[in-house]
Image 1 (cartoon, helix red, strand yellow):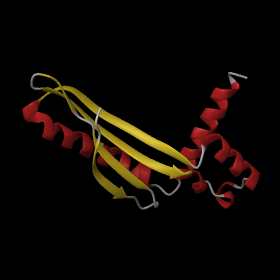
Image 2 (spheres, one colour):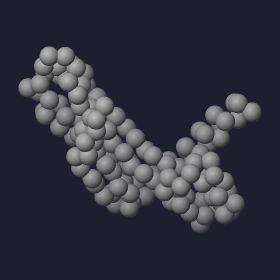
Image 3 (cartoon, helix red, strand yellow):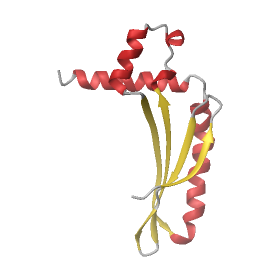
Length: 129
């Protein structure tokens, strides 16, 4: 599936959202309309002072997750008529902006997301050991 970067948005918390159009033709005049939203969050966003965690814990988080964590959401609609492609894509985009943008712009979001991903990965790996 080919993705085309259509917009980049700087958030008030210093993060940057990238919007991609990954729509593709399914059959005849029917389309899969696909909006992908991505944000790279540096693990350094989990600052030692904010979390009260030691530098060793921050280094452990970096060891488990790497230097960056990827936030990604997809919004899709299937079997959309070709004549409705643009309107449906704009609807998906506007719904995302209206419903999620405030949450992602929150100053605490990057730290919370990194810590959530860290806990999930550690928990998942503990099942295998």
